[in-house]
Image (tube, rainbow, N blue to C red; front, side):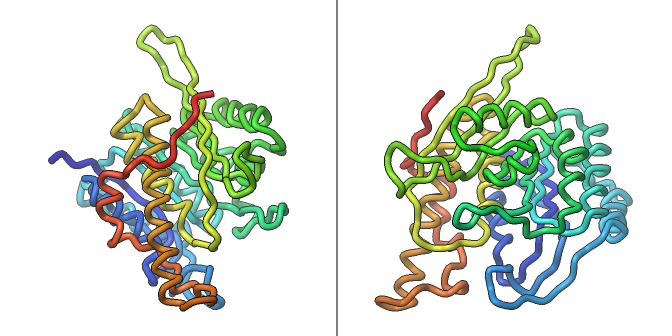
Length: 309
């Protein structure tokens, strides 16, 4: 079975949150080198956490170790949660160097900055990361997976309708990435308030130099629980399925979202059983059930179908 090399820059959260990304990609045939952006005792969905935030000097030292052993040969770079401005800027330098070595390298960026709660958005990383994402990261990324709030931050435009979301994705395309997926939004669904809308847009370049854009919409049933790590898992799965279906965003997103659905349903069912009848599951009980979902990861049954716009 062929393997593909991935440099993964992400948070290390000891209670196993982002090992889910690693496990998911390994199951699908990807070899992973992992560099931590932060090293926390647990994810920040818990009441307390302890740990360290890495800086650019520490990242540079780790990457130099890879270079000295001549193992810095990658097909993909995947980045997620980061908290240090200098670290983020160093990631860009590394991506640019890797792209000089391999012009076909694909950089998948989950621009983790914040989210909306009860209609109000707020950042949960330092605000000085935003201009670095806008001016340096997005221009070198090939695939980005912001939520609605993050897409608004990056574009400087609010989204109140599907048409405005499509316009924001066009703005993000113009900044660099050929694939933009808004992983979640608060846009109203025709199917009712129990559904969440995600939108995707992919520019496909033809051999003659012309370009067409494929746009899709997905409507997913909401789960009444707060999970941590779903954005990280989404980015990893989208990397895998766009690799397997590089010019078919519809199929890649259907497999990504359907796998997510199976993982979350299994997680909430297990969590409710552990919590007991009438009790709300704790953060520990809501840890994503990745190992138990191996078959759904390898071959997800399509339960969410995308609409081509």
